[in-house]
Amino acid sequence: MSTAPPQVNGHQRPAMPIYGEWRPTDPQATPTPPREPKPAEPAVDHVALAEAAAIRERAAAEAEERRIKAEAEAEAVLIKAAEEARKLKLANDKAEARAAEEQAARNARIAESNRKQKEAERQEAAARKAEEEQQKADAASAEAIAKAASNWRRYAITFYAVCAVVALPVQIAAFWDPKAWWLVIAPLMLEGAALVVTKGAAAAVAAHRPHWHYRLVSWLFAFIAAGINLWHGLAAFDPATAIGTAFASIAGPGVWDLHEHGRIRKRDGVPTRRERRAAAKAAKAEAAEKAAAKLFEAERQAHLENAARDAVKQLDEARASQFPEVHRHALKLAADLGEKVITEAIWKRAKRDVEGADPGESAETIRMRNAAEMRVEAARQKKPVSALSKTKNAQLGIQTPRSGYRPVPPVRKPKDTPPYHRAAGRAHGELLRRSTAAKKTSAEEPK
Image 1 (tube, rainbow, N blue to C red):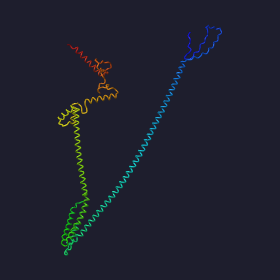
Image 2 (cartoon, one colour):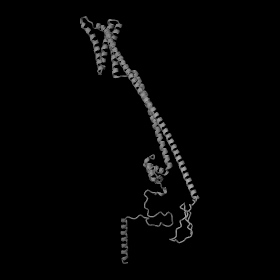
Image 3 (cartoon, rainbow, N blue to C red):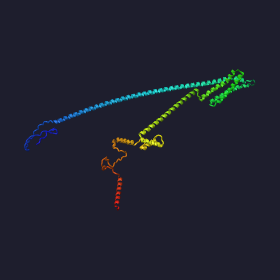
Image 4 (cartoon, rainbow, N blue to C red):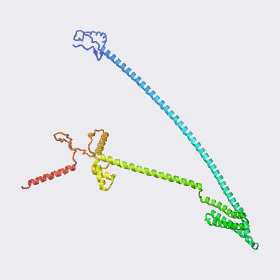
């Protein structure tokens, strides 16, 4: 018999009762009461205890690790919160400082606007005051001019009258005849005619009509009166009286005509001698300035022409050094077309004749552009440049795989070639049928 294990599933197994020798059961015999088992002493499992201790230590270590991790996370959260609070405080400080700066700038703009407004108001007031003063000055000047003109007119008329009073007695004496006393009216008529013609000249000046003939007739009457005074004064009186009365006959109309002459010049806007000298000086300065500007423009045009000539020469030298064949062909074309220099049209034609491309294009530049475009396309598709086709219109569905430089031709495999269209299959079948029929017919013909 085998002995049962002391433990089952980690628990102490109770001890089995011992019955002694085995005997067959007698139904009439008195049963012997079973003896009570002794309590089993618990067995100590050191492995389980070690495992439990290890589990407890591991749980404690995990708990400690979780605690440390939680403390680290809490500390990180606190640090992050502190950093966020610091950043928020800095942002608030910056916003407050920015708001203070904006407010200060706003106050400065308002103050500047108020200052400019006050300055504009002050300038406007000063301009208005200056305009009022100028108006007052102009009014005073106009009044002074009008007053001077009025005085000058009054003085001229008064002087004319005084001269007439001085000249009339000698003229009356010259025409006096007791038998023909009415002849004394002739001097009055002569002086009156001169006065009337003078008034006519004034009316013509005011009406902007020709006035020279009025002034001429007035001077004619004045000289007639002066001649009468001079002739009769020398004959009847002394030379002083004759000369004085003759001068009076001329001076009165002369002063009045001088007044009218000034009024005519003012009306017509005739410049004075000073104004004419200033105008001549300004015209001379303007002519000198125009001559200097013309000379400067000529020098500038000459400089531009020289610069353009040098640029053309440099361009021709650069073309001759960079494109010698094209340059020689362009020279031939220019000579053939009767041009002295290589024009842009001739250079474009020579470039197309020699290199087959317009200026700015060549086989090298086209290849370089194509290579650059391939690199860009490879960068966009995240593929190497060698994986792209050399041409943009390459055949996408290849018939056979690439063989490289192997000595044997490539071997066709199933599905190397995309399936053909049904129409192509029908056409191929029809061709094959016709070919077979033709071969059969040729075979059946007698030889």
